[in-house]
Image 1: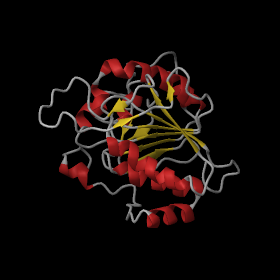
Image 2: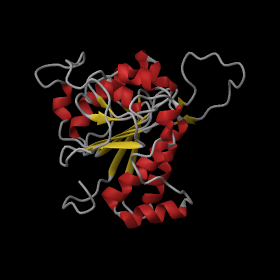
Image 3: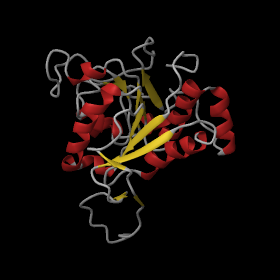
Image 4: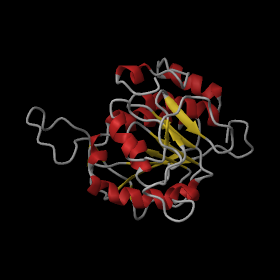
Length: 261
């Protein structure tokens, strides 16, 4: 789906929160969408395990230096009562992605929800969370380069792209020539049935960004493709943000020694 598509642009957004989410993974994309909401009719559902405020502070962390320095966000929905008609879902990353216990309800929600979406967007290590479900099997994706070694182990069947600011895997268009590393073609440990979990979402365009701030560049690329260049350029100028528009720009792959860079 592009700005030239006959389908109207999406209106119903959701974002997942969990203890220890990375603040900029969430607020970078959301602030741009906040501004988009001034010119377009869009809505946002903030989804978490409960309606209690969710902290950026990672769970089970004993940090005596700045124990009170964190932000908390109040969800609007739980995984049980989230709207069933979401069109775009954003999955952030952060240290909290390492909490396997907290990821269990998220995995269940993703498996249920992603097949009904129009777009799935992941930021930073949010791609690891999706990869753990099997929904990224045989799909192209990127992630935080500092966390590369851990992330790729979460999805051995994902076609991980080592050098990319963001990656678009859209089944309706031909794949990019961006360099890919990974183990695509191996039997997935998370597959169920012949096609695996990924088969249920094979028609969904999946956007993934590199680490943290890269989510801002990805969301502007998304806005440009879905809502038009004029909207993307106008919002970037209002926010005074000089964005990277080349999806292959990625000096951090070399900095963090990611293969293929």
